[in-house]
Structures are given as C-alpha cells and as structure tokens.
Length: 73
Image (cartoon, one colour):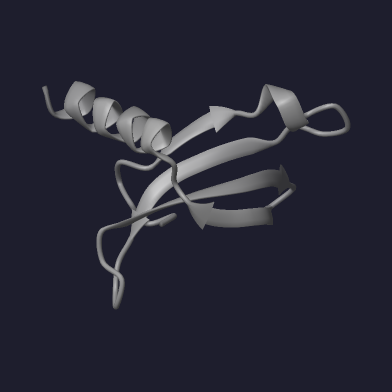
C-alpha cells in the first residue's frame, strides 16, 4: 500500500500524545488486489514504524475515494 500513488495520509490527533502518528489509507496489490487497508505509523529517522494494520472502514474508503477524485479531476 505504500506503493499506492493515491494513498492518503492524515495526522492522527487522537493517538499523538507522545509522538506524531499518522493513518495511511490505501490499497494493496497482489492476491488481494483492491482491498482497502488503513495502517497507523510513525516516522523515525529513515524508518517507518507500523503500529497496526486493518481493513479500512467505509468512512476511510470514502476519504480515499474523494482524494483520488480531487487528484484526477
């Protein structure tokens, strides 16, 4: 999903008390092509630390779709 050119990253205000955390919404390719996944991450130097990964909920899929529409026009 990090290769998804339309992945959508948003600052996670609810879980950023100790460090900046982000939610990344995107699709993954391969066997389960087209599946929407949301991951929680933080960036440390050159590394991405993954906290969780789960299926995206309908609201997150809508956020992603609206972002793609705004990019493509």
